[in-house]
Image (cartoon, rainbow, N blue to C red; front, side, top):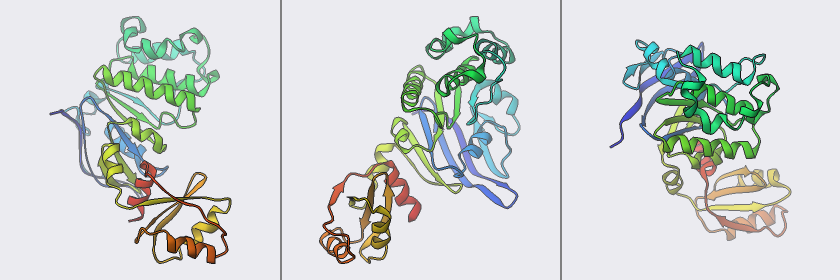
Length: 302
């Protein structure tokens, strides 16, 4: 059985009257990519800062790598790599200077630990003399990850590492995380992108500081207990408003270019007739398979 690397028990955090986290209970195991999935303001960053010993919980207890997050914060910080959501390296220093600085903080150097970051750093090494502030989003991301890895951490914490990065760089980044995991590293990562949840071994769905569910992505989808339907239309918002007034519809919401809805009674004939009576013409309703976003919305609205 995998070793528990992070354990949160009854953890809550407030900022004045704002409740960022409410009674969080969570265990994260050695060697897994664990994703914390949720929209902006869900509490992901607060949770990560607590785990990284940068904040103190108002209540509850956090154990990281066998250490207490409050009493043993110095020991924890030596053993983890932390990549915050906002690019926090020195903009006026070059790529190489930033990396050398972070290595020196942990009592090492680039030459000694180059093998730890080679897979990531080799992609930006041709630009090592360029100032960090002049890098593209994807290159900044790789530099920040290199700095987080240079001291060979046991735990890697990544707070929304792909936000604002192009689709190609996002895919490359997750491929790098998979290779790090294959080498035995434990990775805690947050993202607002529901499609990235499928790349994690397990996920926690978080909304308004509360964990809605924890499981593998496959099990989260399997637990979706409604038949899901979709409508393609140019008047999506009008259709959603109409569906929400119909008794047999459980939920109706926008999903990209489609309207997704679930029903208390999964027969669609009455819904088609209702929408046609509301003036929406010949409506095409199809059955589809749910994804993580559908599961998240279902949990959030229940």
